[in-house]
Image (cartoon, rainbow, N blue to C red; front, side, top):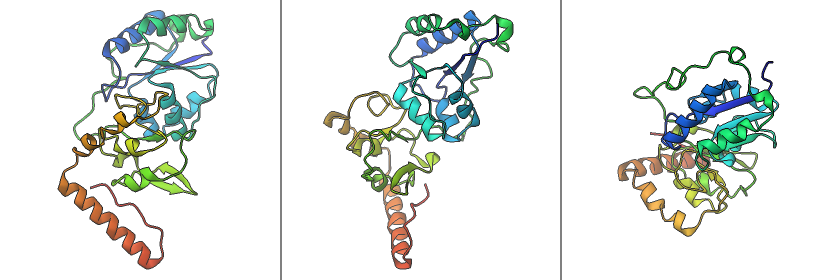
Length: 260
């Protein structure tokens, strides 16, 4: 019997966002079961480059995804132009135990599981599917917008110094994910509607859980900005002001400055 279902597992290999013991136990359990599996190093990295695999998975009936918060995963796929069907099952390794995730998968329709000869061959954990980052590689840290929450206030656009966002037809969009300052979620803290998600961030709702950002969560803004040197901030502000002045003089729409 061939497997008609598809399980996609994200290792979050480039950031310590998921408990290592949960990842190892889930991956070992899937490998031992002979499940038809696609294991990827990092879904954020695939979404940032709009990898065609995301569209293929989104069109696969009965898709099951093992990753992090479902809200984060749904908007990552939407950012990549591959919105997930409402019935897609997303298993959360941030909150759920490996035992609970594997139990749910084993109770799913039997077509998710196939004899090992039909899986295409599953290598043991720690193989070439999760290559380490090379020096100078971009860490896939960037925001995605939850359009169920976004009200188009543009505070994120005005706040960001790095040209990550743009406004297209009145809609705020992430235009340059690789311009984002690695490790900084400050734009999400200023969003009054908790609509900005950083899937790799440690705390919710910025990480993509279902909560709303409180004043306590916004208190971290000063710490986020501390990662920027004063010289860097001043340089970015000067570039932004110059770009807006040129645009105003020429009657053009201002362009965000490039990342330094």
